[in-house]
Length: 245
Image (cartoon, rainbow, N blue to C red):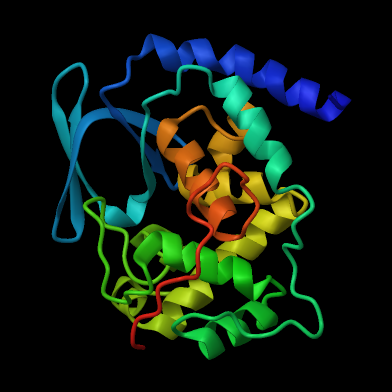
C-alpha cells in the first residue's frame, strides 16, 4: 500500500464512526455551501424540497440550494471495498486523447463533441449517462435530478444552465461534462474518486479521503467501472442499451 493510500484509509477510519453513530435509515442532503443535513425523508414539491429531520421538525427549501442527496447506509466493511474500488480504475484514461472514436450509444456525436471540448474521455461520459438516465433526456429522480446526466438544478446553475434547460440534451451534457472535468482536475484524474464525487459530492470524497463508505456511492462507482470493463467482479460490462435520440 502506498503512503497516499495509507493516509486515505486513516482519514476514512476517523470519519467512519461519525457516520455509523447516526444510523442507516436516513439520507444526507448536501447544500451548495458544503454543509450537510441529515434527514429522515426528502420529497420534491415543485421547485422546492421538503426535508423531514431525524430528530423531528421539517423544512422547505429551494432545490437551487441542494447539490446532492445520498442514502447514508454504510457497507459492513467499507474500508476494504473502497480500497478495492480505488485500485480498479487508477490507470483509466480520464482525459480526451487524439484519435478517440465516438462511443457506441445514443447521443454519440453530442457526447463526443462535448467531451472533446472539455477534454474528457467520451467513453467515460457515455458510461455516466448510461448509469444516470439510460440515455433518457426526460429522466427525473425522486430527489429532483434531471436529464441525461441527472443533474440537480443547483449543479446546472453552477455551470450556467438553468433548471428548465436541464431537459435539453446539449445543455445537460454541457453542465455534466464540465462537472466531470472539474472533478478530474480536483482529484488528479483518479477515476474512482471522480465517480464518487459525481455521486456523493466532492466534499464527501475530501472528508473521507477517498471513496465514501456509503452503499449507494460504492455501488455507483462499481457500476460504472463495470460498464467500462474495469471491475472484474461486475456483471455489468455489457454493451450499452441504445435508445432513440
